[in-house]
Image 1 (cartoon, rainbow, N blue to C red):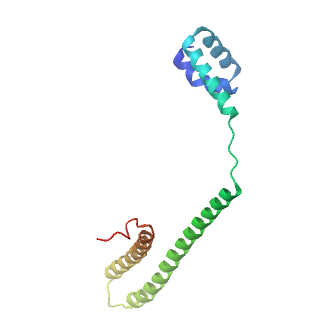
Image 2: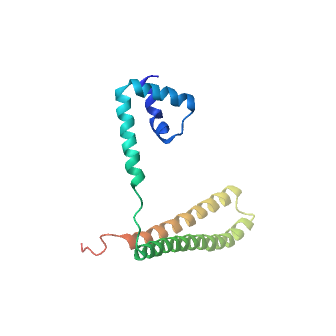
Image 3: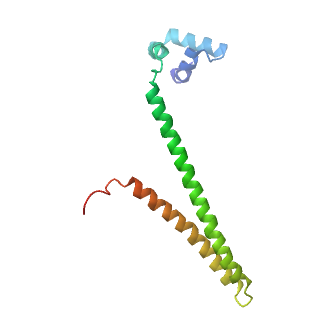
Amino acid sequence: MKCEEVKPYLMSHLDGEIEPDKKTEIEKHLAECEECKREYQAFVKLKQETDKMKLADLSDELWNGYWKGVYRRVERGTGWVLLSMGAIILLCFGAYQFFKELLGDPNISLIVKIGVSMGALGAIVLLVSIIRERLFLCKTERYKEVQR
């Protein structure tokens, strides 16, 4: 085997995740090639060091702060979704009532009815989106206390 064929398998060999026939070929190459052998030894040292590592135990205070933050983000995210959906539903219901009158009028052409309907629904969605974005920006504005 050539070096470029062996190098992709060095970590797999180290982890014991390689087929026996491929393992034999790699070991034969490592016995003959100093460059690949050095790289393999570097992987061995790296694996030994990472095997010694463990996660630090966090205090209960840190964990409680973390879960409060997660809860707050989920709660607020859910609130925004529900508020947006509620606003869209109410605006659509109002638009439905308006369009029921508009669409029920036989004197107005179909193309006008479709155009007005699509424009109004697009305006409703954009309005809710803009209001939600503005409320979010007001809360996160970094320079709101800076005088102009």
